[in-house]
Image (cartoon, rainbow, N blue to C red; front, side):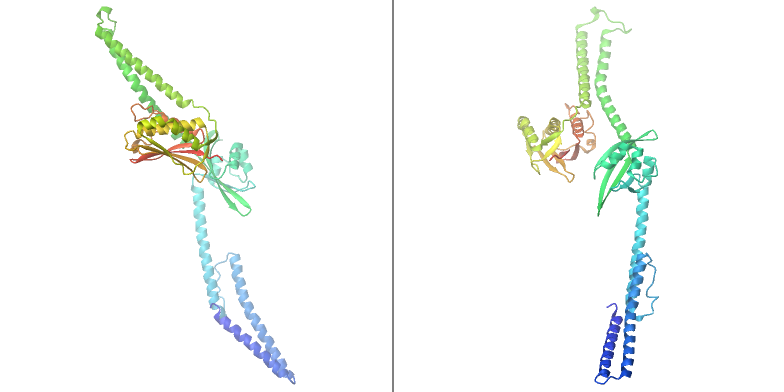
Length: 455
């Protein structure tokens, strides 16, 4: 017991007061002795005063403790300042409590310094926005990105850029937006994200934004370089044989001084070789025209007509459409949705084309596989996106080319065009969806489609 001595002292004082009361009653009956009564009453008053004083002493110490806590004064020592031996144990507990509070205060102070330094160090602008549009917290990157220091309200951001302020107000939690913003004549591409904290009677929106122009420029440059390499490869494959054939024909039909030969000097063999060379030129020219036509198909994609679509009906129609080809190849197409009756927001024709492209790619991948099969499944994630997996049990895509499969015209198949996956990804993106290679091992390959869910 913390106040054992104080507890015993209370009992002694109470018993003494009771004994005194009995003594007063004894001397008052039957004949009052006023001398004893007055002395005993005086003693009783002294006892009561000392008892109350003892209790008030403890109350004052407790009040001192709460005052020190309220004023954040945690260096006060109760044990060393008290002369009352009855309260030594509780004063030791008071001192231990203040030491723990002081330690927590120091830990909190150090963590606050750490988080503040981290908050200022990161290369991302962060602001907090309440329901009234007030900005209570911001880091130095906000000033650098927006080129203005005194930003305390959403109206201050409106003065800088109205569209940026509108995007911040309307952005939803866990949503990302790419916003273009001019600063001193320099175009910035800001990736904006939001999170929401709910407190009693108030909501705080945390907005982060980062200038990713350099990353976008690097990606764009990398994309152009890859595309140029593919275009160069395709054009060189066609122009090389054409140039070689033309040189051979010139050698056959001209003299050493580059003058044309007489008709009489052209034999039947030379004529046959010339015709064969012209056929090669014609074939390669048609190939170049076909290549340009395929390239145009990647750049002239129509705008999608988005509507609510039942996924089950789409997949069932595709199964019927491809049933003859799958039966000839001996391939089973199985549709096993984790959630049935899913609806998504997409263009019906485009999503059908994407799924057909992926299934036909799987046809080629499992052409030499025993018991070939293609599995299609669907479910939703925590963000209410519809996810569609299209898997096969083929040998998989080699790891060294997995990052190239979405590059236009890249193909490892002899008769492949190299536009199927690239076109499918573009079709998914313009509908607000995505197409990714989920995994590919020697046990099979899985592509995943993501679309917004409809209700």
